[in-house]
Image 1 (cartoon, rainbow, N blue to C red):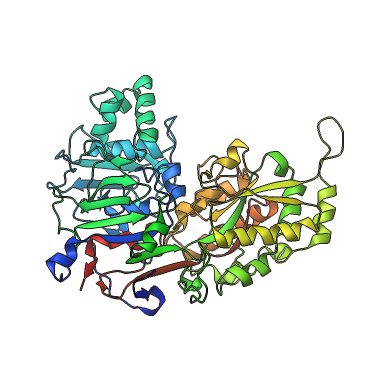
Image 2: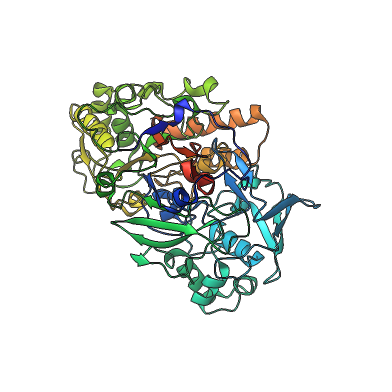
Length: 561
């Protein structure tokens, strides 16, 4: 990067609530485009979909698709009162009153209504077939959403005993698509009426629109489809010139300081932009590209504050379906050596759910994964022999593991090479199956045997202060459970963990989850996700974001001095 950059680890910034103003500098400076590099794959406008989640598109759209909250720099939930308010309401179970601001409108002028909440719930609850949501966490616990079509208020009632503890994070930024656009696609007058009458053909059409109707095309974006409910709106997308965000002139809150932000991701030409002036803000996994000769080593955010960890998720089908095969593969992965070489100071991490930033993690991190702390080639070789014979009765074939990740990625390429070298000594062939088109769901389709990514099933920024959402990666049937891990003990622990607020009980449930996950080898935790976050020293208002929305969490407050 050619511009002088500020590293996030060296800066302490006071964080104000979303919507607070900043002093702006010269108007001309604020009007020229700012270039923002991320490691998201800019594939879809639907951040709540499985594809949008794994590709990390919330890094680009947090201040485009407004909600009742936004994840702050430490992953904490911050209420967005520009969009509306959420209040506890009387009731025998957890009951929430949602009220949109009377000024809240989409960029086409249509009011935001409770229809948008109903669509978000239907798509993410897991109760209605056909929706390709990232997870059902939280939304699955909602019994019903009481909404009069077109109203700007709704009452959300949770099921008995299912007081989801992170309820403030539901219906947040990136979770709601415009229901009136989806209804038009589906040929219905109201999403709410289709849900109320259980109109199967209409719900199928609604799911199709929600799943596929918001893929990002090249060129100018349809202003009647890709609607904004935040300070910015998406104007165009091109793999050469990036995703262009401009001020949303229908936004009713404080206007964005910078007129234009151009977001680059994994599927854009970052090399060309680097040669044409570089980036003023960058937020990406460390070691994504090979450093230039003589370049300073990456300075990553402190591992102790990481909200996500890198892990290898393992398919419970194909070559790794038998437990001895999964155990053998885990035994030959050199976890300690990988942390030393690629963890940027992070210790080996042994937990599947709790992250280094969690206060509960330290007491139990050393209690798990010790059998797999370092490569044990002898044990791996013996476990390979314990696999059951093939259906024909012949001995099991040589163990071959296709390990995928979103490529190109210089650091992860080296990691997979080291894993392959170690496992080869145990007679296990590990194939580098990286691809720019890899899908996190490739484990379910059988295209991959294992995938290297971050907790929360993301190839990009991941995590939040409360890990409850990502715990559903161990819940049978949830979309975050990429490898189809199905231990009932883990599912029961996740179910209790999601409604528990007492730290001691959360710790007990975390132990239960980890015991089950390691026993069945659901995934192989590695180390805290190393992220490098930089920005131009002439910028103000930029605050490194550790959660799944990244540093763009407050991009509307960025300004040039």
